[in-house]
Length: 437
Image (cartoon, rainbow, N blue to C red; front, side, top):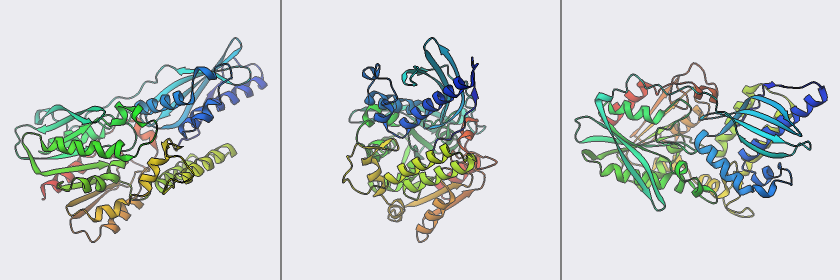
């Protein structure tokens, strides 16, 4: 959910009425991005003046937003705004915060408060990734591989312990949204940390770029998690099996967030996996999870203004629209919460706990109590649902957040803009579980 904090710096303002007009423009610029964040691209197109509407289409806005998500992640908040006049036009610059970083955007309005253009402003300086102490490059080597599918291929990385033979290997599967092979969120790289940490314990990994990061045009109309996640995970498992020196009977899959939610489904299509690891994995329906996040951030913001309440309710209504079970009156490519109806129907008809019950091999469920995206409610559902599975193990980490890094409090996505590394204790626990000790 996007939060609603605005820190406004007024420039060149000499009259109160003009200041109020600028406030309106700042709000309109914010509302324009918020409308696209909700997948309402035709409505967003209506923000433009008639004189420029034929120069940009709703489909082009959709593609722009998808590409923006590839590099910056999900739109979260606005933490600063500036403005100035340029002849007959007003210029508003918002510093927009996304889950993977911040970026400034400049919006140009005419006197009718209609949008006539927008462009990327100077990028905000971000913190940089810091390798963890356990990332000892003397202990492993890395080799690039390709994860192929019918329409192309993505780069992958094998991280292999030096001098090891007959080693176990873990395929790492991303969470939701476009992602590079490291699972980069701001200055954090949880999949890279897992790869280096496990390699130091004698366990190889395979991670790869998510298809939606490289081929965003493939996700413009109808699609499901099959195209987004499952097909490429199965190809990665096949590549893992062909890796020289690997113990083919010791190939595991670690899914993070959405990847963990889908891990039982992937395992059903790859029954020779030795086990699956569900890291911060939703056990509930996605709509229930998003609704909880939405409410949590709304209450945490402390913003009780009518506008914020209205926006919260609008998001809640959109979440309720996503609770589809079959196609009826809605077209499969209808956009709900930035994804097509086909996507929601596929997820809503999937019961990940029931699928996990059918998996006869080892299962490890890991959860951080400081995770505001996937909560202990999900962990408890996994534990209750898999209580009869003798091969299921469970680990809770009181201090870990959704990126599996240690934090002092639950917090928000602001944590993701500060460098941190995956917990060494969690890596140790995974290694012990894989080795069966």
